[in-house]
Amino acid sequence: MFRSFLLFSNTKWNRTEMITPGVFGTLRGSFIGLPRATGVRVPVTVAEPGRYRVLARTAPTANTVHVTSSSLAYDRTFEFRAPPGDVQLYPVDQVYETDREPVDTSTTTVAEVERAIPDELVPVNFGYGYQDLGVVDATAGTHTFALDKTDTNPLLLEGLALVPEDVWAGLALPPDVTTVDDPDALGCSERTASAGGSDGYVDPAANPEHANLTSDELLALAAADVQDLEPPPGGVVGSSQLGVGLTVALLVASVLLVRWRPRLHPDDEPDGPGPGPDDGPDARTHHDDTDPDQEAP
Image 1 (cartoon, rainbow, N blue to C red):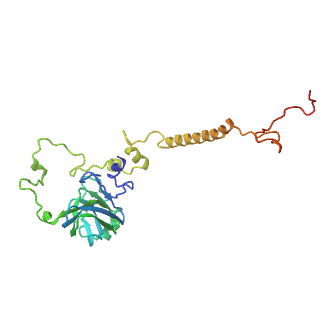
Image 2 (image 1 turned 90 degrees about the vertical axis):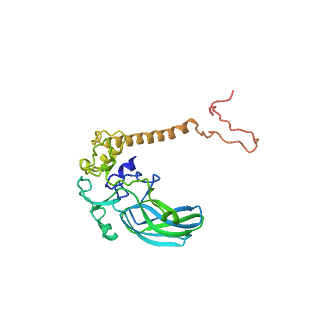
C-alpha cells in the first residue's frame, strides 16, 4: 500500500520518477521501473518454432534501449516513444493544476528530455503501449532478451510478447466492435462529477491542497486510518524516544541476567591439598576444619 501510494507523487519517494497509477493499466499486475541507465534480462518461452513479432509493452518518456538475444541472433537499438496520450510531460509547476497542458516532446531529443526531467518536466503515465521490436525466427524453447537502457529518462517496462507473424499481420477489431472516442456517445443514464477535473486525475500526495509535504507528513498519510494531515502530538519524536528507552532497558536486563546466572552454579576450587602420590585413583581431597592448635582427643 505504501509503495503504491507513493507512485501518485512527484516527490523523491516515488523512485520511478513518473506519476503512474501503479499496477492499474497493466495486463498482469506488475511492471519494472527503470529511472536510470541500467539493464534487465527478460526470458520468453516459444511454444513452436516459427517467425515471431517482438513487442515490448512499456510506458516510456524518451528512451534509448539496446536489445539483444544471443540465442535468436538479435541485436538492435531503439528509441522508445509513447503513443499520443499514453505518457505526457507537464511543467513541474503546472502538473497538479486542472488546466494543465502537456509539453510536446515529439521533436525533442533524448538528451534534451534528460536535462528537463525532473526539474522542469514531470512525466505522467496514462496508459501502456507496445513498442514494435521487429521480427525473429525462433526455435521452440526458452530464450532471453537483454535490454540495456542507456539514458536517465524514466521508463516503465511491463514485459515482452512474441506474436506469430501471421497472427500479427491479421490483427483487427472484430466487425461487431465499435470504437468510442467521445464519452457522450455512451449514453450513460447516470453521471458523477470527477474531483480531478476534465481528465479525472487526482493526486493524493502532492496536489495543491497537500503541496510541499514534509517527510513526517508523507509517512503519516501512508499509514492506515489517517484522519487528517496533522501528525500526532510530538510527531514521531515521542515514538522514537519510547523505542530507544525500551531498547536500553532490554539491554540492561540482559546484562544483569548474564551476570546473575553464573552465581547459581559457582565453580568452587578445593581449599585443601590434592590427593597424594600414594593415594588410589578414587582418593578425594578432604578439607580439614580442625583447629591445628587443638589437640586430638
